[in-house]
Image: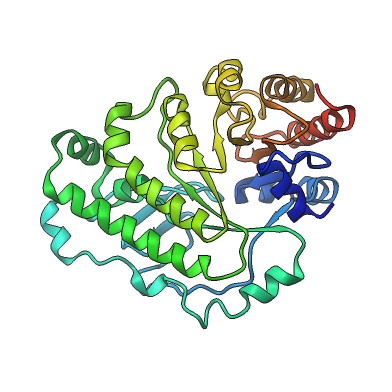
Length: 341
């Protein structure tokens, strides 16, 4: 079974030979543990890949996002980073004053055009991986532009500028998606962190009213093109799982260990694919790999089905112990070989 077939079978609950696997590595981890990173890739190669493409950059972009210093993104947001290998923070949001909205333009120049996508279909045909591309964020990009505190006030007060900004970012994301959907990629993903440790960042009714329609439109476009949609959202997002299933999200990457994993399984197992993950705060930094193995077994007891619905994924990040990451994937392979935890 090829990696591409394995992922499709997992998403379709059509019995893959094992759960697809994917390691998310941050530069800080691969720089700190280069030999371990090579060995992890050798033992647990990813079933996912990206297409060959040289997308255009905006003239507004400057610097390296994961280097110490200043980085300016395509929207003109200035990031400050004090630690090599991770992403910093926006300290001076360009729309702190709504008056600046008059002059803000999306980075339309970064939407891939035909000349940028020329090699994509060829690279998809030559690869047996499930080829996936990432889109820009919605909620997070609004935070970067407006400032987090300002945006939360906007969500409650709902000035007309809030809707103008939301729609501007959303229309840009739709334009990028349209470009990719005209190619042979298998899926697209979008990241937006919606949870705290205990609950959604905003009342669920406001999420459904103000943001759900945007995600629904994007997912509908992706699914209509015959592609698959993956969403990543950190934090406690239990309250919107049902909404994600309703709008057609294929796979969700969320911090399962912030929530009641067993209740997630009781309500949602078999209805959406769980795209990882394993706890980054306590489990992956543990010096005892057995802690990681038990965490995987807990996820498997709640969510695993040999027919599909679970992707073996975790993040090799700043605090991760390479032995714990190795144990995660080794345990998933053991579970698959014996048909369950």
